[in-house]
Structure formats: C-alpha cells, structure tokens
Image (cartoon, rainbow, N blue to C red; front, side, top):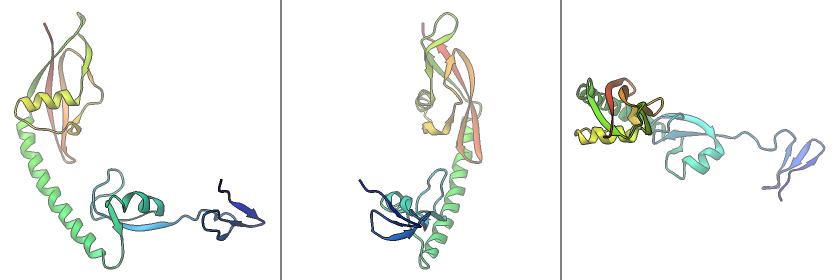
Length: 178
C-alpha cells in the first residue's frame, strides 16, 4: 500500500519519490483547456477554462471533449465560439417555429386508473414524447419539463423547453382506459 512518508516538515511522495514540503503532498495543479463540446454545468464549445489536471488528463482529453490551450489554439477557440453562436441562433429559429406548432396543442394519453381517478402507473416524459410522435411531432424527452410524473386523470399543462430562450406549453389530457 502506498503511503506518504513524513519527515519533519517534508514528505516523500509514494508515486514519484519526490520530496515535497508538508502541506503540499498533492499540489493543486490546474490545466488550461479549450472545450470542443458542450458539457452541461461545466462549459460550452469554445470556452477556455482552468480545470484540475486529473479531470483534464483522465476525462476531457481522452474523450476528445477538450484540448490543451496553447497560444496556437486560442484561434481555434475563437472559431469554435463563433460557430457556437451561429448554431445558437439557427437552433433558436427552429425552436420558435416548433413552438408555434406546439402552442395550444392538446394530447390525449390513455392509462389505467382506479375509481377515484388515480393512475395505477404514471405519465412521464417518454409517454408524452411518444404521444407527440404519433401526432407527427418528433421531440426529445429531455425537452419536456415535468416537475413530477402525472398520476391523476384530467388535463395537465406541461411546459416544453425547446431552447434556453424558447418555451411552449401543451395540454396533456390523461384519460382512463375502459
């Protein structure tokens, strides 16, 4: 088992045998990277950020999600950022068109329920996406915002987030099977 050996105010590191001052057993190393893909909650394409050395070497670089930022690659970051902004605008235009189609739309979903109107199961994002697909609207499940699954019969208003700036509301009518 590898252990750090402490000698007065110095330590011998188990992996490389280097002698370091106490308190710096595992120095906080950061690497500056350019993100090549969007990573939710971390960065978007073209962003230049400092990340921990291990995160960069063990996750970002092997999966080609980022590359090390050097003087030469800063131009790459600028081009990626401009492409991202153009793509953002085209996505927004497409989302606005789809929002017009969805606004005011009512979708019927049939589920088994008891006499009080409580469903034996529930209606989730997948079932709503499938019902929309039957109506000719292909929509990813992650666009559908349900705070919790629908568990009662009746009409429910559901928000669809097509783009960070574009949202639409549809009506989901849960009917009981007879």
